[in-house]
Amino acid sequence: MPAAFLEFPVSAPRTVVSVDLADPVDCPVPASDHELMLSVRNGNLDALGELFDRHHGRLFGFLVKLTGQPSAAEDIVQTVFQRMLKYRHTYRDKGSFTAWMYHLARRCAIDNHRKSAGQPAATDPADLARHADEAPAADENAASSDDRALLRAALGCMDPADREVLLLSRIAELSFSEIAGMLECSAGAARVRAHRALRELRDRYFKLRKEALP
Image (cartoon, rainbow, N blue to C red):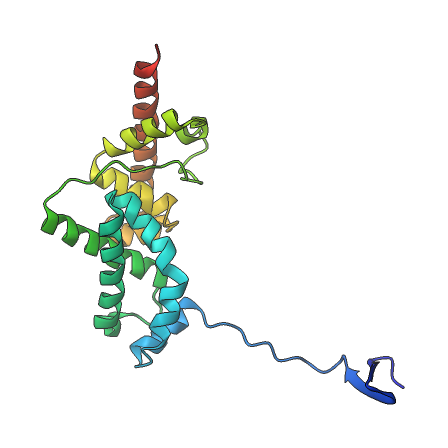
């Protein structure tokens, strides 16, 4: 018997099943986000459900941090996917689904803000895992709830545009090229804005921390 076969006993003592290890096993590869969105664009609306399952949690987290309002974030997530369906014909063959999703999220958040006529609430940056430069990050020092409260206050005091570019790069993890497409600026300008926003967050945090010391 060829070495490429294994035998496994099955019920009756002399009955065996031969498995050819050389035969390829078909393992379906899940469709990419881009492929699913192209399918939605072409009329397979069920594919949008798969995209929702993959991304609604992370998108909700981003919008909570952007708006500071969980209830508003829930509404905006629903609006984002409604707009995906409505404007599916605008999705490009060589597009980036993630960048397109956050572009829609940004526009929906702006519309929601205009309707509510409120100001964005303070946002917790404690989980900004990556940073625009290699300098020590303010949130690395947030070892206590008091420090996290200071971080929320520091981020809440930032200009909304600076807070937005920071969240797009750190939470949404978009490239500077993708952010530049949203903000209608160059990738270099988006990088500079992210650096500047991070420095501002750090400066505000340490200032508030110093003021809070007894």
